[in-house]
Length: 628
Image (cartoon, one colour):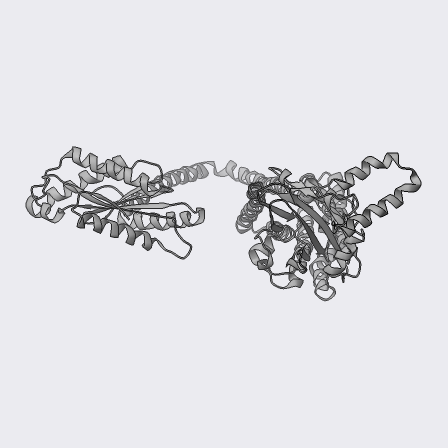
């Protein structure tokens, strides 16, 4: 409010009075204990962050620490002195290229509402070596979280491939946060503020996109491995090595290696993507040499290409001793290798090599992604959704085009083979025809037999899970489904309900009417259960002897009790005669138990509770439903 009043007064003040007025106002604010503001940075109203993320780039004050030695107390003094630089233009992130400096970022979040707020602060670049978040406390000291690419993954307050900090904003409060970031590789800080539900939805989509890329890479690797096994052509194993190394490098760059392999060594955490990219370039050059046949078509230049392969195989080990001292030089060398690859592809295309067209198109897409990635790393292009995912998009498109190229190569080999066969066919037509007919007949028989075996296997699988007497699920099937649904209910925090059903005085029924009548009685009850429990996901099973059970996931006890009543009513309506029952008809006792599985519990807890409820139902007089 005081700042807005000052802005309204400025036009009416003489130029020579502006500075004294500002100094007087600042002194007044400090005297009354007001908080010093960073010039040009306003507090972010956290309530306004709904749905889409808010890029914090325009809202951050930035302080460079060239020696990387500033403490939080010194930074607080710098904030009070207005040394933080503000006014960054709207963008996805702030890039500093490759620098040994540490940077401090100041962020002020405001919650003017009457309810506390939860927000998620995301720093969306996985290769930042050190990331620390500090919140100064009013009475002195600070709450601090220290993590980063070189820190153990468990140091992250939220398990994610990027650095995500859950924030709690009390009602009617204003919180100041200081973010310290240092990186020995590319220094990019894409900071965004999320509402938790929106972040979780974004997180699911993000990991789905990552899974799509790496699933495609896995499919390409397996497909080309099969081709190598079948054809014994080394080009396919070179492509497999290239795809694996590229996928590993991108996984390291995107934080997935750190998350899923849990690298603990700070050095290896920093160098994982460097090794991946170096080996990927080496394997890619080898692939190019074989695909374009450079030992024959580019004899002199091929020696240089082979030298580059050796260089990229060995050069990453230099970083084990120098750290990331030469990372900027390495980025330039990587770009040089990309340019050489494009030049070789162009030369082959000018010679009208068929495979060169596919290779050049694929390599240009990858080269564009690689150049964008490298230029972003050294700070020459801004960080946004396009540049952040350029390498991955280029790699995906490159894999698709190279898949066509390798398929074309395979078809070319197949055409050559067919051409040779055609010459043999001219003199051996009859023999080949007979052989083909025999093969076709054999294939048909094999296909028919395979289909029959599949049908039999399916029937056997169904029989192994079905009770032979009643036709519903057996105890084995029930135990498997119970274990699966128990784990799902644990993950989702949903209730799981079990009803145990026992036929009242069934031994007396057997003794009086015989086992055949007893079996028919059980079949009648199974049909009643199957007709009453019809929701998708529910399971009816014969638990053993005269005991049955039905399992209802994501259902509370009231819903299952209602189903149990329908079962009792259906049996009453069926009126199966039971000479030794007080009601002169077959009845059942039902015990129902429901709970939300705790992390340290197993399905036996639910079984014991349902058994206890069934025991009470039988003890209380049978033909009733008891809820545990």
